[in-house]
Amino acid sequence: MIVTPSNPSKLKSMAKRQVFLIARETDNEAVKGWQKKVAEDMEAYKAEGKTQVYDSLEYMSLQYFFRFSQAADPELLYDLVAKSKPTKEWLGELGFEWTDSPSFLLGDTWPRWFSSVSAHGGDGFISVFTDAIEEKNYNVEIIKEVRAGELLTADGKVVGVKGTASDGTEYTLNANKGVVLATGGFSANKEMLIEYSDGRWADISKLQTDNDPAMVGDGIKMALEIGADVVDMGHLQLVPTCDPKTGDAYPFIGTGTNLYVNKEGKRFVNELSDRDTLSNAALVQTDGIFYMVCDKNNSGVGEDGTTYGGQNIQDLIDADIVVKADTLEELAGLIGVDPANFVETIEKFNEAVKTGVDPEFNRASFGGDFINPDGNPGIFEAPFYAGPRTPSAHITKGGLKVNTSAEVIGTDGNAIPGLCAAGEVTGGRTVAGLLEAMTSGRTAGKTIMGK
Image (cartoon, rainbow, N blue to C red; front, side, top):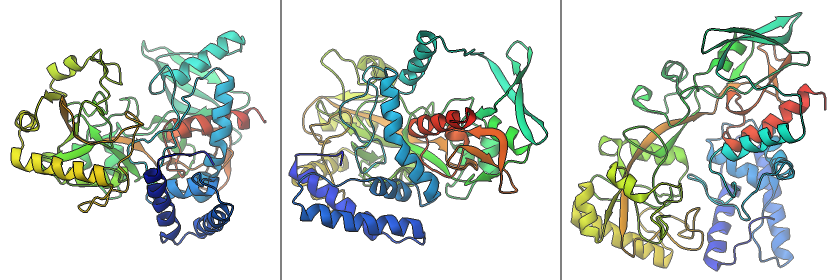
């Protein structure tokens, strides 16, 4: 039971989401079992007179299963969820400093994501590992700028890997215990995206990516060559709030739960929807572009003019990433939308924020978020800000088929000896990103070491 909001409106909106997930239809028997257990547990929890919000592994698994289009293998997903807290604690023991409270990420309906106190993105995780290697004098050699190209096998077992350095040097690395593939997905490989497209998105060829340009599917291609199986390869996730010029998710101000308006100055979606819904809604707007709008209190801009992401707000304004205005009419002019439509949209949104009732898009919560945990997304106090956004290819949810021990499964249905995989290179869990990377990576390490 980890989520304990004291605000009655937050409690009410969270309770609505719980009931919604229990009632959602699915053909998956394992998921039906989660729903049944959550329903029974919630009733028992209420009968005990508890005032905190009910939570459990089954409920968390339900949230992720339905958030990611019911594409997950329930066994893999539940395994990931069950291992997430022990992995968080293990990282803490290594020296990783976590925030005290969980927060929302874009597309979430529940505050589950803890982050680093001192670092953003994945940097904090990398430094914890490199520091531990140095401090504990582990026998680890890190070779940089070498692109893996071939898995080596002997008697049906993976025994090493070949690679080529940026200067042309050829490497052959032998593995006594096995190889772990952690090469990421293929969101920067348009040919693969088009090849495996499931038709969910109108024109993948036009999408930019906010992912690393190295995410071209090398690990998947290497494993396919030795008989590995893949799963859910068409399951691409977009981030709806990216820079139209670069495709990057950052920088911007505010948060993904702020107000969205299109080029007509009108709201077009429930901003708390899942990422697929948000992206599809955005792609059909004029030019596939919309604007995220925020005010002084929920922009994340500090008194020193620095954003939550560490950028100077004036630098973002100068780069045409953000516009700033003292009135709503002025802001509408700067982003080129109809002022009357824009002001009317803001007024309706603000009323929904005040009352908690959203007749247009049925948004369930207007509480705090990652940038503004104790506030709301209303547009009340100048200065006002807005920035153009569009969807980009973010992560590929499909990849190598694995089991709960992180072993790669071959097309014959058996684990390939000596080969494990972790993170976005794998498929079946649908929950990618740092959560999957840390938990599945730890599992893969244990499997390779026979622990």
